[in-house]
Image (tube, rainbow, N blue to C red; front, side, top):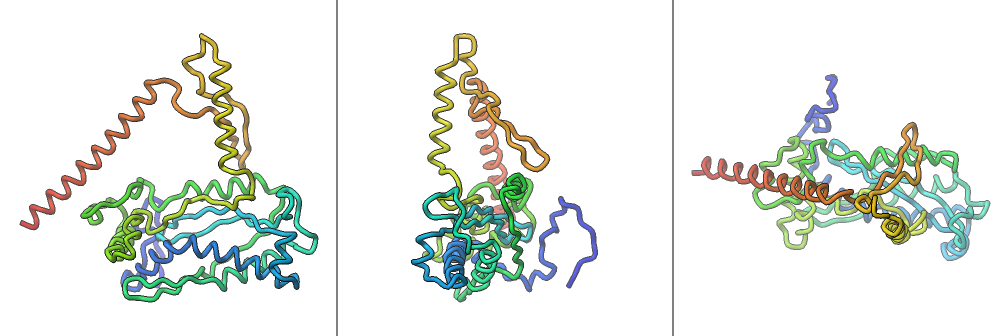
Length: 315
């Protein structure tokens, strides 16, 4: 089956299956729930294959080499997760130093490709045994330090993408809310499937994450030694904020911590600069809180109205 029509990006039908009855909605949400485990196994198998290609044992390779990565999970319009990742081989003793000369980019690419085809996860859900693995779409491009800007633009593009543009799935689902969600029909079908599978006590977690189509991980993750740590970043932010407060005089005490342009980064053709963190004034904080409360109130009213209509129709 195929469709020859040209649709705009805002068309809700984009991502919908051509054959609704042919779509394995259960398989999609169960796959999404297993993506994190699949990726973990891929990194383990990739290291094993790398050792095999080098003709050494895993224990011997661990003495000189380790795999580091950063990955981004993209929610495709059809509701299935897609992974974009940067994988790097490093020397064990120094995260900046390259691995031994015999560990080449070509060899690492072969190891990742074999691992992606080999790994799988089994799940017993909904009376079915799901054997889950990565699909056939796999593209591996060698990169080096000269591509740093492109890497940032590449990952940043997919971090900002989501399953829908109106934020309809930005909160957890409550009982009776699924049928009233204002989202495309094919996504609502996946949410309803996740909610149904989560009715089983041992799979209640699927209801908890039904709003994210059963993906319970973070959109952006990395190995501990890929770059800096989150703890180091938090420490740097605290030190910077304390320095701003300490250096603030009587004339600028009200804007202490608002931030100044202390650096800039070029990502592709876009230049990003640091402006600040937090609210500059108390009124900014009050406005943000009031907007959030108003949005929550409007969402509750919409849900209550939909429930009232349902009760009237039932009676």
